[in-house]
Length: 73
Image 1 (cartoon, helix red, strand yellow):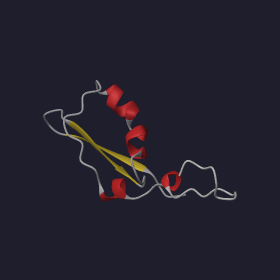
Image 2 (tube, rainbow, N blue to C red):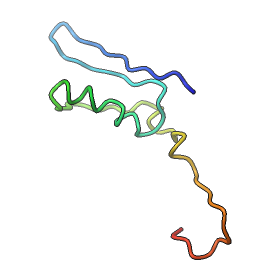
Image 3 (cartoon, helix red, strand yellow):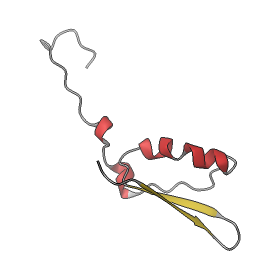
Image 4 (cartoon, helix red, strand yellow):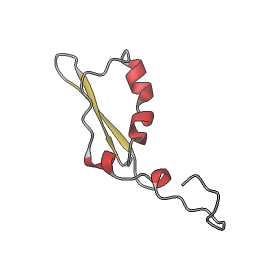
């Protein structure tokens, strides 16, 4: 399992920002919902990191056993 971190920065003016590290794909958004809610839920800017564009483990290709007929794909 990769190390997962949330780095939180607070500027002298009180502006809060955080960076998610070690979480691939859009699941990082789910992992930070509690921070967004704790800070009032208003996001001014969301800047995806390169990891955001990588596939997470649960987002990879899924293969199923079967005869290949009758599926949705």
